[in-house]
Image (cartoon, rainbow, N blue to C red; front, side, top):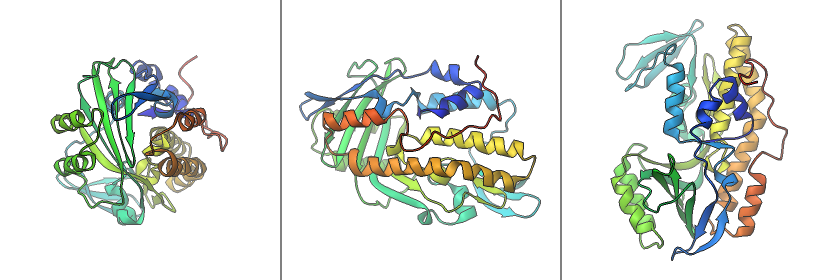
Length: 341
């Protein structure tokens, strides 16, 4: 998970910046290799690691520990229906008893159930970018130290990078494809798709495919964006990827979600219960920021992501990676003061 720019200010205002910085992967530049493992280019860390990079599991744990004393968490359940009226939202669950809430915030990702219930089917809003990605854990058998390796072939790429002080590694497969019909929760089918796509490839790919089969942590999904005319409907509002996913190729998804959460929470507090005004102010502030990031995501998918990269292209990407250069940075209202001196 990469944080860039103003997202670091939000972490500071949350009082979590130093704690998260302590878990920075400290990822350096990575080598780009050919089928025989010969290095022919360098992938600058600025492209893929952001200003601060941590593992998703570590970030989730920190956020949970910081909030569990005053937040009710319900695991192993999901929303079944939403029924709004002027006073609140009646929510039924797959397993738990129905409950009423003042507001519902859908922060449940690209395949948001909340979005489908409040706004309509996923097909109306999710735009496939032509790339699929799988990520999984494995031992650091290459002995890498705060770095990675990237192998690219026409229409596909594989990379390995270190994690947790080089005691572990993560690997990723990426390939270009039109929309595939696949279940979102069928890892066996996903692994078969990857194995078929990467059969016969060189470098460490045969070993990585075996490591993938044994992986305890495995993720597979389309690189996609969510495009919506509005992010709220009555007392339901969307946040992060659920409402405005920019796609992994943007490199801004985590920062975008964090900043959106800060603005939404701040406006709700500042408007003293007027959720309609709060939702409108939140959306007004976020729209230009999201539009720029989605443009970056489309550009990354179309031009730079899967062709075998040249050093010239990589250097150009690195030069533009630290910040968005096409617009002014988003302004963060001082709902919450910074915690550091």
